[in-house]
Image 1 (tube, one colour):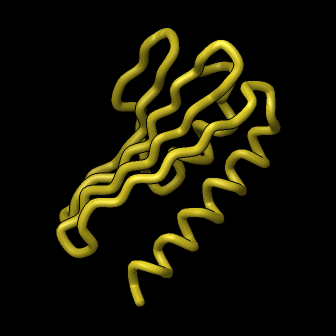
Image 2: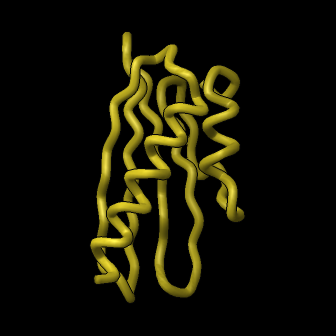
Length: 95
C-alpha cells in the first residue's frame, strides 16, 4: 500500500507528518503539536480507497472528514479534492 499510494502519502505527510501505523490495507499518517493532533487514515478495500481525516484541536475542536475514491484514480486528483474540502471546512470553522 505504501508503494501504490506513495505520491498521495507524500502529499499528506507534507508539513512534518509521519507514518504512525501501517498494515496491509491501511496506513495512518499524522502529526502532533501543542494545539493537538491531525491524522489521515488511508484504507484500501477491493475497489476503493477511503481517506479519513481527523483533527483534535484545543483551539478549533474536533473535525472529521472522509472521502472515497476509486482505487486507481489519479493521486494528484485525490489530493486536490482532499485539500479543497479541508480549505472549505476550515473557512467555515473560522467564521
